[in-house]
Image 1: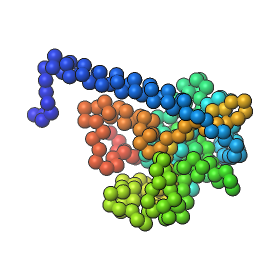
Image 2: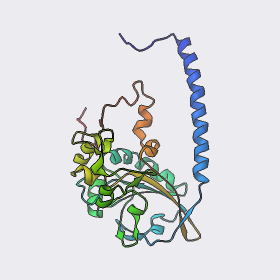
Image 3: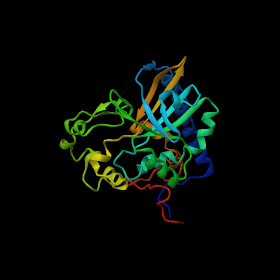
Image 4: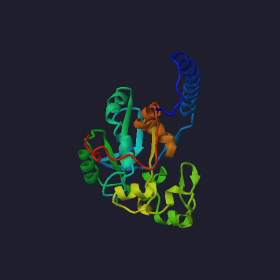
Length: 264
């Protein structure tokens, strides 16, 4: 017999209506947050960023593909990774279904990583994805991943020079047991690192994020970026789990790449 609270249909309805009011409030708050995002000042991009794509070298303007808005998902796939990050892969599983809708609303969705194109395209084929995926070239004075705070050097990691998600991190060598990203080989981050074929330090020098850009009169502006839990809304499976009876029901990292689950 269940240990969860049970009720009559009328009692359930009364409780549901109270929750409905809270959900409405959250929806309206989300609308207001969206307006605040769109009201952020724009920052002009003057650096000459270059990318490798399936059709050759491209500029940042080229990534817009003739549209005025560009959303970039900073996919964790470093040059030393053997495979893409499982968490980023779970997020990216939802891209193909919305790319066409966004494209027909003047928005291009693009993934960008540091790994070479051949490795990205091989992994893309393995996952069965179709969304566009570019490699950001690391150029002197115009390192896209470093500039948008999704890649950090070993020196930054060692000396405490990482500023991610608008906060400065402690040096990795001074990590404590309360800092989950720097724990031992059994930590969530270390397990994710192993799944990419790397060690923890190498894995965490790349980070996930999303950045938004607009193109007006031939000029590109950076409008918004989010990282870490700021990406929750893009992670489709969690939106569904939040509505399931047992919620996220997590005990560590349970998800895998979609082709790694046992056949059911």
